[in-house]
Amino acid sequence: MTFRDDLCLGRRSLIAVGGLGLVGTALSGTAHAQLPGPTPVDIGKVENGKVTFPNWRGQSDRPSPPPPAPLPPEERVGFAIVGLGRLSLEELLPAFAECKRARPVPLVSGTPDKAAAVAAQYGIDPDAIYDYDSFDRIKDNPDVQVVYVVVPNGLHRDFTLRAANAGKHVLTEKPMANNSAEARDMIEGCRRARVKLMVAYRCQYEPNNRAAIEMVRGGELGGLRFIEATNTQTMGPGNQWRFRKALTGGGALPDIGIYCLNAARYLTGEEPVEVQGRIFTPPGDERYAEVEETVSFTLRFPSGVIANCATSYGAHENKDLRVHGEKGSIDLQRAFAYEGQRLQLARRAGEAEGIEERRLGQKNQFALEIDHMAQCVLEDRMPHTPGEEGLQDHLLMEAIYRSAGENVPVRLEPVQGLDTTRGPAPAQES
Image 1: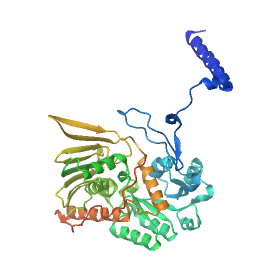
Image 2: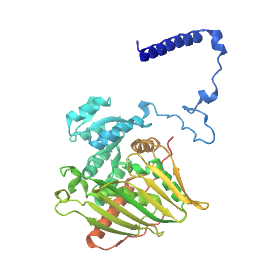
Image 3: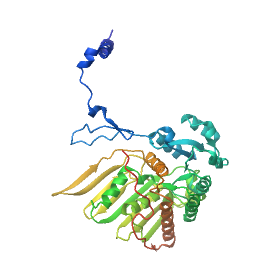
Image 4: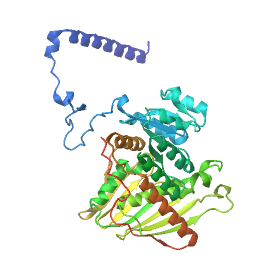
């Protein structure tokens, strides 16, 4: 017997003896009575159907969040997932495991064997699988309350209108459509059908981005002066839908540059009064025969804030956001990524420059946005990012394209007020 064998045997013997001892203690009323009783700190209590615990940590540490309080499965809002591409399979369906108010019900796909495999993985009834032609039968499925449209951009309008005609609320991926005309059709179609329409701007639900909004609006930076937003990545083979204008409406700008545009708008709450754009596409690269590779654009806001934004399909991945004010600046690294956000605040600390990192923890952005839509359905509320929010981004992107094409700044009609295209801010999730 080796020393390792002897050590393992000793541990097993100790565990066995200890286990029997604990069982004996548990069965002995006298011994059990000698044990200290549980306290409210450890037991917690039930309030309004939720288990809560008092804070068990010292004042110098962050309190632990309360335990999740999901709705019972039968009370959650049923979502139909239209399109089983990478986003649905890599991010959305896994996110439902972290949702508290939503559950996936049927799947809609043009690939039967893939739909069957995914349905089996997630315990979805095989009879709740639709193809694109039979999608309209979803009207007769009472388990479906929301349709999540995750097909290419050029198909968003069609499936949104079909879902609205079936009496279902709609959550559609960004960009909302291929252009502002299609976006208007979607808003009007949902209005006529009296269903809700929300655009999946996940970053507006992500905790670090929300914290940046609160810091800017709360005056921690003083007067805002300048925003820098970058969203770049390198693209692979050309035989993918993102290079087909009929399916995308454009290239890097509507696909990933929209995050920069939307961030400048949600940070300030304002709408720009002037835009200027520049486009570069490498000559001879057949991938960019229909769409652009690189766009830089500047937004000027009524308050004087200037946002410089850059997006590209041909530059190494960068998804950072920087905000500069008279009293400090924010550096939000990986602001537009699915995970890994890091929020730093720089400002004077006495005679020194202080760099403060705010650790908010990671939460699944997709689960947060899905649950927000579910909450709006359950409580009959307007979504924070309704169709009007998506329409405004399309109008601004069209102005950026016009500016780049004509090589001139494009002035826009001033919009009075803040957050004019958004509903109430999402509730902070524990």
